Length: 214
Ligand code: GRF
Image (cartoon, rainbow, N blue to C red; front, side, top):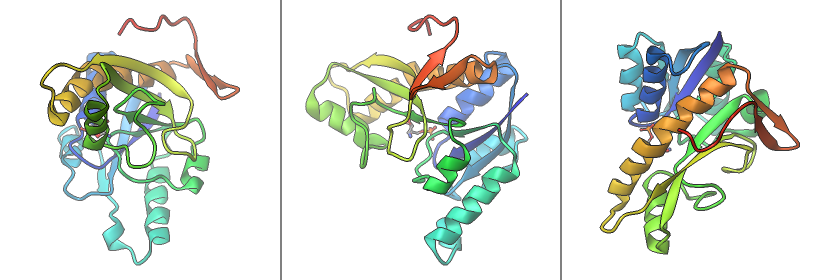
């Protein structure tokens, strides 16, 4: 059974998609053993508690230095002995020591088709603002392994979403979450939990998989 720790910062809709997928059997051989937020007001913590899952806040404001916060944040994550760490709407810049502690065992959801609209400054609504500003017709979401760069780790799954006339950043964000994020995150976790994902020469291999079907 794959033990999963989920790191959050906000509303927790991706966490909810994971919990619902486990409950419905779309994800097998996995359990969420803990949810960690850097933000005490994250509704994601409430979603975890409603599901009977340990929900902890480790906030930078409670530590004298950034290094002290990062140590506590890593220690709390490791306390759950997770086989997989999932960044689901997590706004914390994961320190190198923590990335290295979970090499190819930490995944992130980015609300764009990497390598487009990603990297420093591209998070949350800012991503969709830039997508609309550029006038692209297709955007989407990406699930990738986390490495020491920003949105640069090996790509696991992606799903495209069309931009529509009249889209605002908020409308587009919601569509990308509904049509892409909430589908590819659970799918990626299920594939990992069932031993079908590997990384060879910096590229992800998924056994017996047809892309584009979800
Ligand atoms: C999502 O678009 C996610 O990709 C981004 O933050 C938004 C909210 O995520 N990182 P959630 O509802 O907290 O899962």
